[in-house]
Each structure stands twice: as structure tokens, then as C-alpha cells.
Image 1 (cartoon, helix red, strand yellow):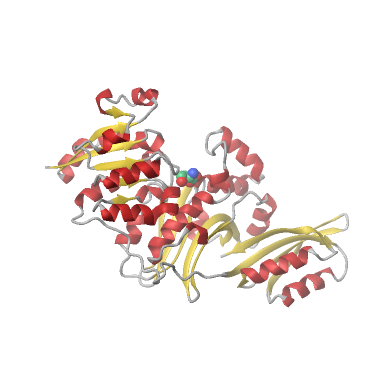
Image 2 (cartoon, rainbow, N blue to C red):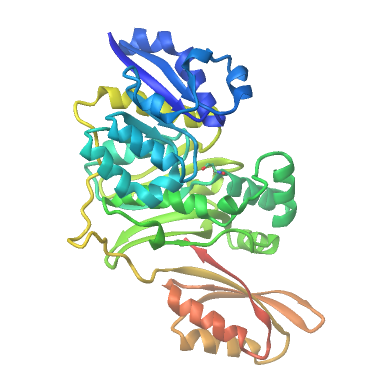
Length: 424
Ligand code: HSE
């Protein structure tokens, strides 16, 4: 019988979930996989949490040295989150030859190479299925089930909080701030919502996922990021009239000009499978040159879904003949080739003085910047002002940004351009 000793660092939501699965499924792992998994240590400073989970005091410690020097521990699960002390604990465990399983997307997005170098030098495993999209097995899908493809693109709804907020705004016609307040009161959004609503969480995950998809390390600094704070219910409503749903999409693409990775609010066709992903659910839509399109859907957060991914890594790591390290093919300087610009269609909303010649001015600025108009609609007209929505053909981001700046400077455009939203 194979034996695996596990230490859990941090008994928060996900650590607690991991403990619950490992203890409740112990018999199943023995009977099905011939593997006896035992929690040998938990590192936690909150005694109340230990009591809540009914954990035997004999395996509890507050000292990482005790964990890494315990010969019964084979796998260390890091579910503390943040950079420190998580990074030091992980590296200490790897240096002691322990395999590490982590859910820490920020740490991996920022320090993947450093940590992997320590893992390789010590012939230790480093696995992180739980870092992206919680219980949805997207990492193993990319690394083990799609080798026969060049992955062309990956598009995902990979942050549940923002998807919950956008769903409420769309279905109930509410404004961002009202939904956020309500979500915070119900515990769906953090008191400090920055990581979610400003797109940081999704950007960390996209950095990891696009690195895996393209076998090129995509550093977090190369990921364009824009959150959902400035989205108004008006834009969601107008988008629907054009047949679109608004989502915070994470997009990774490999094209002729290199790799692009971006997180931003995006209009997608209501008929696209991602448009029907609602509430706090996540989904990842991957296109390979041979398999074509596939979509993975499920819970991207929460104690048990995330713990499900951690447990999968624990069992996986014990079954491999050699530890798996991601094969990167960055150029000789260690860099990938990244697209400096990207192109898509755009939705532009602006408020203008309602008088003759204004549309001609707008068309002129867009034309001067090579931004081709697909459709223009005048939405409202009140007190001598009109709301205009322009849909463009596919155009470059740099060109549209320049045009928008110039539009804001026209004397007949009231204030600046109200909204600029990308359309996939
Ligand atoms: N806060 C994240 C979300 C889950 O809302 O999806 C953890 O990454």
C-alpha cells in the first residue's frame, strides 16, 4: 500500500476543505487507488479553527521547521495565500525535498520561475491546479490533455465575484456600486474588493493559464488589466440591443505578432457559450488547432471545489514517475514574443450636443485614425444633448485610444468619452 503523509499550512476556508476531503475519503483512496493518505501535520495559529475541525492537537504546530523535518510528511499543502510567509514556507519545504501543492495564484504569477528552480534543484514536485479556476481542472487539461494541439486562444470568465456583479447588473438593471454593496453585505465580495473588481485576481490566473497554453512564460507585467468599476448599467443595456452580453473576460491569444494576454470587460455575442455563464460560476473556453473549441465550466472558488483540486494534486504527485515541470520555450533571453498592440471591435459611448454636423465630426476623427465604423445609433436626446453609441469594425487598440482622446477634445462632445468597451 502506497502511503502519503500530508501537511496543511493554513486552515482557512480551503485548508479546512482539504482536511475534510482527506479525512472523509480516506477509505475511498485506500480501496480505489491503493493509497493511504494521512494528514500528519497542520500549521495553524488560530486555535478556534483547530477545535472547529476537531483536529487532534498532536498533529498541530505553529512552526514550519517542525513540518519540514517531519519524515512522515511527503506533501506540503500551502493554502495561506499572499506572498509572505507563503513563499518562504514553500521554498523551505521544497529544499527539504517535500512536494508542494499550492493554491496561491499571486505567488505563482509573480515568482513561478524562482519557486520552480528550487523545486527542480531539490527534485521536488510543485503543483498548483487549485490556483486557477478553483475546482475546474483547467491546468491538467492544458498540460496533459491537449498536447496534440497548438493552442490558439484561451478565453475565460475566471473571477466569480465580478461575474456575480455583472450578472446582477444585467439581469436586474442595477448599477455597479449598489450590487457591490449588496454582495459585500452577503459575503460574496471582500470588504476590500480591489483584487477582484479591478481584475488583479483574473490577471494572475491569466498569466498562469496563458503560460501553460502557449508554453511561454507570460509575466504578470505583460497582462493588460482593466476592471469593471466603470461599467454602467446603460452600457450593459445598450450592448444587449446589439445582441451582446457583458463579461469580464480573460483572453490569451497566440497570433502572428506574438502572444497577447488581457483582462477587461468585454461584449460577447449572446449566442457564445460564455455568455450563459452566470452568477459566480467560472468557465474557460479553449481553442486548439486540432481539437477546435472546448469549454470547461464550474465553481472557481469556495472551500470544497478548491480543495477538490488540491486533493487531485496530492494524489497526482504521488503517482508520477518523475515530477512534472512546465516546458517553456521562451527565446534565448528568456522572453516570449509579446504583441505590443491588439485588435478587436469596439463599443464607444459618448454624449454630444444634439445639433447638425456633430456626427460628421465624430466620423472624421474616427476616419483620421483608421477606425472604421460598423454602426452608429443615437440612443437618447434630452436638453439639447444626445447619447451616441458607435460600434467599430476590427481595429487596433492604439488607434482607437488615440481617436477616443481626440473625440474627448471636440467642443461638441460633452465631457470625455463615456465608455470604451472591447467586443469579441
Ligand atoms: N476571489 C476569486 C473569485 C476566487 O471571485 O473568483 C479566488 O481566486
